[in-house]
Image (cartoon, rainbow, N blue to C red):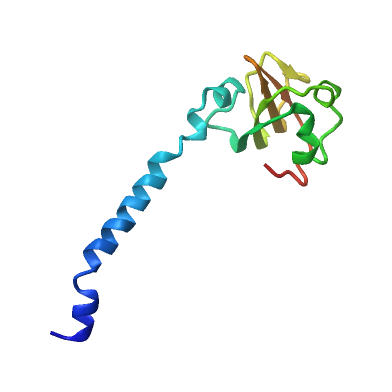
Length: 131
């Protein structure tokens, strides 16, 4: 029996098993963003590209994540924790609580979910965005 076979031959099943378990854990341990009810409540659907979804400990911290976003006085004065969904590119949302006119196609939506109701900001500048 060669040295290689003795050194590697008995270990490869263990290496394959560890790799398989790692892939399965990574695939199933992290919940899908698309299935989060808050993402769905923001109006994100199959035709939209959800770029990010994350928690912010304080609504007023939006500037740290969206440096080019227009001023939002309702967020500037709010210390409440919020959940944020970012939809980039063309946005086709059937929304009832959108800030802006519902009769046209938008780009780049930022949905701020506070409590039970989302507020969606449309046509936002996402330059410099970081989750």
